[in-house]
Length: 220
Image 1 (spheres, rainbow, N blue to C red):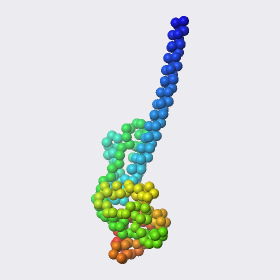
Image 2 (image 1 turned 90 degrees about the vertical axis):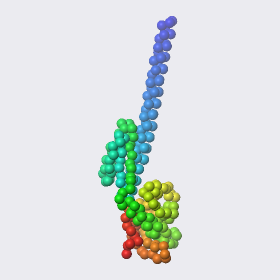
Image 3 (image 1 turned 45 degrees about the horizontal axis):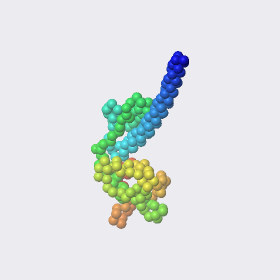
Image 4 (image 1 turned 60 degrees about the vertical axis):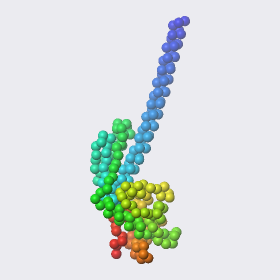
């Protein structure tokens, strides 16, 4: 009788241990899946941040660098270098081989202040024909942005470009191409001097790059 009872206890212990093992394995897989999903989501944000900062580097003549999980710094000047960073950082992180993705950093360049002033002037004075308004309207109004105010620093510029318009689109994406009725279609542009005088601008669409680089007030 005692040996049978002992056998039952041993059998119950084995079954209980197997159940715990199976359940524990299930929990581990679920946790691993959640961790991988979380890391994939972080990787998407990482790429989005990298692309936005790379574009801002180009538009505003800024400097960009990447710091990996070990503290190594890499200067980013071209798109292939940025893509290499994505390749080298994302897969190991998703697989759990590195503790973090690292981070991107952009800082003011030699001509950034000049480009910001050009951007300020264009945003205040360049206007596009608004068919629904039956008049020329500002770029900000055309793209559903808040009323434009002068940007005085690179930090303010980055903050401005990350705001969202009335449709939830970040400014840097909404301003990518300015055209007719918030599209890339051809529009009619003028430079409004603000004193009752204006001149036509021979552009059918204006890119964000051009808002930083082209001094439309000097166009003849």
